[in-house]
Image (cartoon, rainbow, N blue to C red; front, side, top):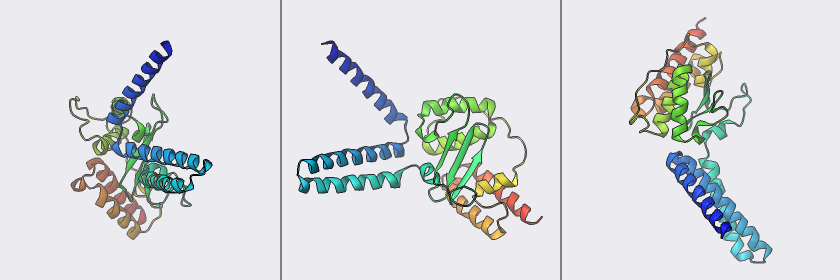
Length: 239
């Protein structure tokens, strides 16, 4: 009797935790996890059928598992795609990056997906796309006190992932950012080399603005950073 009671309590905890995760997690992340779970389940059943000699039943299940796995790979976070390092300075092609004291942010040029990793603090080592909204808002409160640029980037991330996150919150203004943008920072934002020619700089800027301009549902802050990066690099080419 006690064993069944424990099983029931564990099942309730699992259900409540899963419900909270579904409510607070990015729908794209949920789809990725469901696709991976389907791939593992179908592959497991197919292997079991092969060992029992039911090859005709195993084949369609194996194909279904392969299809689910391909969908998982295609739908996975661009952060994972960008982690495959390229030859150009160790940075994956088609990727921009911005680092602040608290955050290491990256932007995929193809999908305009924004994600990041927490560098320090109580959420150190966590990826933004894997954090529930409640934790993201707690992190944002920390950044308002410690990292103005990080706060603005996290606001941009929240605007894209959780559109109603501002509802019911007292609006705060992040502290001013310190110092002008450097050439290195500008090249990381546009995803080009420090000594890139003007035509390459303008092309990278145009491509990003097509995805991130406020008129296209992008962020005013990110658009301003991209414009600043273009100006810094074009000025550098004249030196």
